[in-house]
Image (cartoon, rainbow, N blue to C red):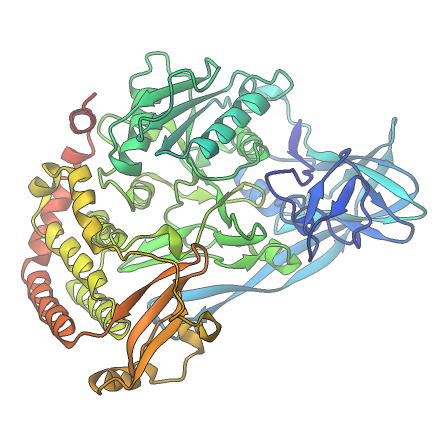
Length: 615
């Protein structure tokens, strides 16, 4: 059986050559260069021309093989690579074991950066057999149990490489039954959701040549109530007009309709997937094959999709995450996955305890009447549900999605949800923060925003804390749509910069690039009269104003920005409000946390959700 196909770049999905093949020096057949640094656009047959004396390598994110994870989690044995090549060549096999190290973040002592370094790379013996019709069988040793394996192909004269697949000789009766339901929550993102759903139906669910033929159904929760009933011309797609209760409401509606209200539910697993991602359906196929071979002792594990940046499609934004104390730690963030060292290091399993719902595959046994997600409207529903329900999450190179990133995605009002929902999320877990850790975090955040003149952010944060301490009854009777509209008052208005803003003077410095003691210096400067007019900096910059009257924060994605002005009156109001929050947290922390934990079953039940969703 096929375990993993060799993947080619696909128009409209990803055209970063080095994520698929390397060593070609842009001499590929059926391709043309359309950008710098190997950015290619597919135009022609699925084949690659390897010139005389050049070497094609599969040491890449999509086409190496994660032998360590396959051997650990599945019944895989007798791995071989079946490829189709025309010409004369020499094949070698390799194993690469990833190496990484941890670098402390100077600007935030609660987080660390995971970085990769050169792997341990060894040539391994492989058996190469030539078959009919230019098929070549490469058999790997069965005692390789760590890292990744791959081949290199050195051409002796011109060689055409047509692709292939990694295979195993397991029998059908040795495999697990797998049937997918896919839940998508959407709010007025018609182009994305139509493209993704139609691709899944075309390539998988209604494709007789696919292993997933008749084994996938899609449940779309239309929170925006803008998709016509006949949007999807397939019986495999179920579209529901849904009350706009954010991502939590949309994903939970998909779970309810796909599993709890489905009398003859055929699904073994349910995939939760964002509406604005870009996905190659090959990722779902890899997910399927992994589960088919999964060992029984790992049946309770999730399969997560690694998150890549839609604007820079070679850059990984996150490979799993953990929530401990006050810190959400993203792993392998910002890695350039065109780098060989990153490919093998990405296989190292970090201490994650959840994966985002841009793509997470969960066993349907988790979806029960007494075990639904938190009704938190936006943010952290995936965090808490993942922490609550999994024996762990399997991540694997090649199972990924691309998603928009950048500060332009977040409004100031999101700070309310992050703060309030973090507190709700952590309430039932032993890893929750202490009262002191919370107030220390709020103090650091307050200091940073005061130095940026962003007083509205702090007002929003404090409102989130206060609403949490009002308890579950307040929360369960809250109108989330009305609350969301109310929070819009905190958002800054982005506008195109006028002639008074000189973008040529824009500054961008990360916290870890600043000299030691910079925030103490900035705080002292803040107390002094401001002698300069406007400092211009990127929105993601630290934005320390020093002795400026105003800070112009520019969003390079929107190509717009907003002005934040210094105000001693607003600043002292924020400081006073912080001390109120400090007293509230230390006075009511234990009692309120206990109440939220004890009553979680009420607001994660089907009874609550049916009333909440009005279904």
